[in-house]
Image 1 (cartoon, helix red, strand yellow):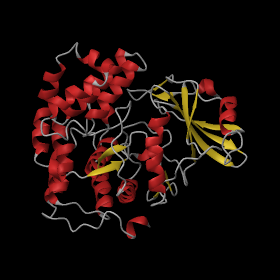
Image 2 (tube, helix red, strand yellow):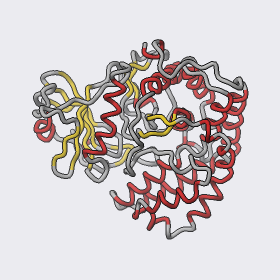
Image 3 (cartoon, one colour):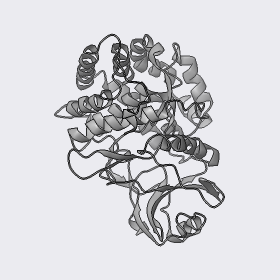
Length: 397
């Protein structure tokens, strides 16, 4: 079965995975450490996600989800940053489950070059299991319920005061464009990642970055005081959610995969959700129609605001942030391709196609139309939000 495993490619195709698939004897050795599993009996599925190897595994005590990372991507300390947040969330909302502990109380297990984590399988249906990144929800109803789930996640996260993560591979951060003057911070971002810095040094990258991002950042600057720090998911899309049933009005039952989580802010997470779910980025070139899904974006925002209404400034900040929200993860992805996979070709796709390309799309006619629609949404908001508290009894239901 492992010989048939394919992973999602960067251009929407299925490709050979970068990491070897999990094997039954490997899983058995791991899961014998976990009292909640005892051993591995059968591999039920292989995840097509490209940055790690993961499978749902049958055990005598029920199914579990196992994820294996190369230590260059996630070591024990890096995984524990995620697991501590999951533990906090799981105490405050049933949408999130904490990872399983082995017999020594460990949730991140290092064996050779690999770091493993074991999770309970989500409740409900994995309706988007094989969905590619940057594809829309299956229905407007799913978008609305996803927005509500995102609001619940933010409520649950309130009060979690761990610092931002250390510089890490494949993590979404908001350290560059949250600055009034982002360019020195952008240079420091590259300096912390020598492989990325060497790649960028061969281009006039600071000039092309300023040309691309400066107009968007100028629009964002006046809203910077609106952002309030919060640990956030940063990869909120249909594939990271489980659903109550297969209907168009299914509700979210579980939120999974916090590998990109970091201390950003709620508005950054909302903009990321729009970017991940609302625009079909693989269709932006030569599209005969707008590659964004306006009704789904509106439904996502409506679901969120049903629990946490936004002020006019907060709503406008989401719009201003949208063309920038992908940027730091795109650079982190380019660094991963260079440092870990040693692939300049993939780094070019991440830097030219993703980092620069997605931002530049917002200057195209469809991109301008999307921003115009969202600006009209923002302008419908009152000057001060009649907002509910970040943590309320209603948000925990």
